[in-house]
Length: 299
Image (cartoon, rainbow, N blue to C red; front, side, top):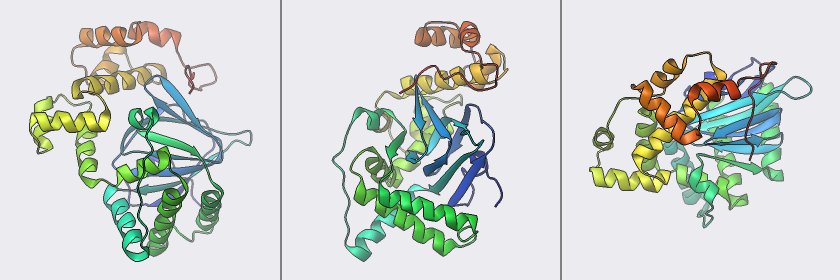
């Protein structure tokens, strides 16, 4: 089968795919309007969030919420990175959960709550045996092109995947799936992510979301656990930090691309957040000689 990269798939019509890479990808940003659920077959996936770096190792499952993510793929000793990936939007996820309830009388809820669920827009979990067998079967089907052009088969497998997650896990992964099925929140989140790096006021975001300013701020804090302006600045600075160590853009270019029209203000905010200037941060955290990104912080 053809090799596929994650950037080719995020917002395509493909529901399931195998991503294969034969060299380290370096840290890069992806933006998606769909939820991503995947399983690592070989190599390691790194997810960067705020000041932490979380490794997703071979045999582990991950979920990425819709929105922006900073990821890196590294190959194993055999020179390969491989993952099975499912993509689905909140309305599809909602229909699957509703269908499982109506057709089979299965209802789902989660009482799990932890700081990771609140702070992160992703989840990582060890893979239970039924789910591992499921992904291995998907890998075989994709190698034989059995699922690539089979829409009904893909829908059946999506139902099976969600059923396995919701009936065998009562931790972060299950909570993320159930929360992602909230289509109203999904639309709200998409509006936010579409405008993170744009010159737009909080009032305009509230208007686009069809909410009053007070209602917007309340919903924002519920979903992101902090006020809108602070969260947006955090996202812009996080992107700037990644760009400074993984691109050759000048400090001014990084600032502009990350939504800071005033470069002096960008430098001031960056220094307040990371206790160093962008230029010095770049020199201290430059890409290492062999081309791999220097992972400064691990979970």
